[in-house]
Length: 127
Image 1 (cartoon, rainbow, N blue to C red):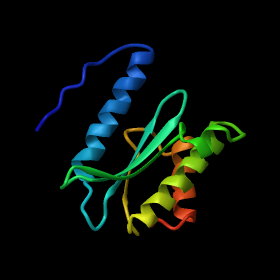
Image 2 (image 1 turned 60 degrees about the vertical axis):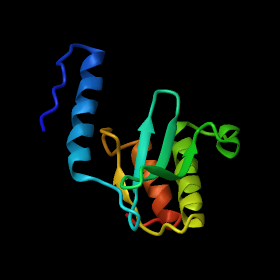
Image 3 (image 1 turned 90 degrees about the horizontal axis):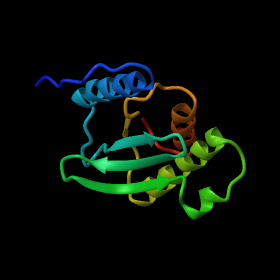
């Protein structure tokens, strides 16, 4: 199935490129009950991560930069992303999830996305 993404100029081009990458990734990545999908949503202000079972359509665990333990933390946005990664891994382990597939949401695997993924791996989630 073809998805059309309108070509834009300037800053809108970055959003278009991100959308294209996300569509391309989602064709291949899907979460199952045994291995759910770890979705990362990055904005200019913060970062959110969810563990989703796509077959049932349920969110099994989530963490955000707005959570109380992360919100008051010190450091830059990469440090915040590390805290979110560790928190979502902790909550996923509590829900009985050992392994996930990583969905970077069309973002490049660098900076905050990589920091979140590395922190989740260190906390015990397998990708």
